[in-house]
Amino acid sequence: MNARTEDPIRTHRIAVVPGDGIGPEVVDASRPALLALAKRFRFKLEFTEYGLGAAHFTATGELLTDEKLDALRRHDAVFFGAMGDPSVKPGLLERGVILKMRVAFQQAANVRPVRLYPGVQSPMKSVTPENCDLIIVRENTEGSYVGGGSTMLAGTPYAVATQDSVNTAFGIHRVVDFAFRLAMQRRKRLTLCHKKNVLVHAGELWQQTVDTVGRQYPEVTVDYVHVDAMCFHLPLTPERFDVVVTDNLFGDIITDLGAMIQGGLGVSASANLNLDGNAPSMFEPIHGSAPDIAGKGWANPIGALLSGAMMLSSLGEPAAAGALESAAVAVLAQLPGPSGPSMQATTAEVGQRVADRILADATNGSTLDLGSTINTQLCAVLHS
Ligand code: IPM
Ligand code: MN
Image (cartoon, rainbow, N blue to C red; front, side):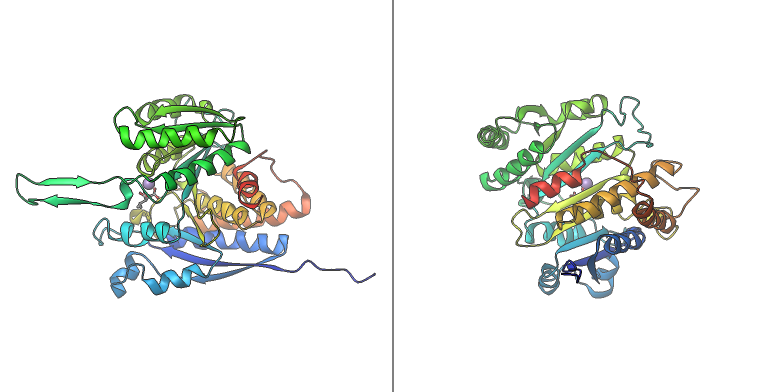
């Protein structure tokens, strides 16, 4: 037996949706690092680009068509930049593309890590790398995002608008169960965040579900925090939290707060996970398209790169995901500010530095050790 058996090459087919504004810049800046990882860890990435967003809508009148959904569905993951432009009426792209994809692909859990990485300064004095490492798990297909409601007597002084919030036992159960499984990989604490003192119907169903599912995870300590109190506690005592599970709208709001305490939207990542394996998950930085700084090379691609790391861990490449996270964090620590225009490196240069670091780490073994991270934890939950 002297012939060396090569691993079969694993191929991951990625649908790339750069979108608008700084979206294409952060996506392009992420590519060299992803390709460096493929080379170092010996897998193949096949990128196929899809035009979606404001520019595409203006040119074609199309949002997310069924044909395009079918095409995207044939991929293993969707890597997303950012979407939106002031020229397109607010709500059209949000509802017609992003929310449509989350629902069509049943991306039930929106995972948004809030970790202050070493070398990054939080705008909150109370937040340090030692006390800030939590994950917000946001329900991603229901709540007030479903869009039901009506407007009567519109345009008159007597206008009446209603906006429904849909909360199903099924939808809550699957995201809560996922949050418990994630907590089992971490410090084994789970916090339900809601407003059950006012939203009594939805709040009660969420609480009952957490209580019921929690019986299967007796090692996990469970508590409850109202969403308004969360806005108070999260920036002051982030160490209180390990995994926070919450509904779609509360999750939208508190994850921006989470992004702020970990150094800004430029470094914040998200994973929109299909938990059944029957449609692709989608990975996107939390920031928007920022048309005011588009094309200047000012956007920080670290949020996109860290989203890319979660994509790799969900594709079953935890070593590559860990290497990407370590390299991105090492490069981030050398940047002058946590967010905003960098005077020392453009978007593309930051991406290239991360790619270079990935290849250098492979030869000199100086990988930054981040301990247990979302990437190992996600891989354990999704692939066990
Ligand atoms: C986010 C964004 C989206 C949301 C918008 C663009 C629809 O704010 O991903 O947090 O509200 O979910
Ligand atoms: Mn948001």
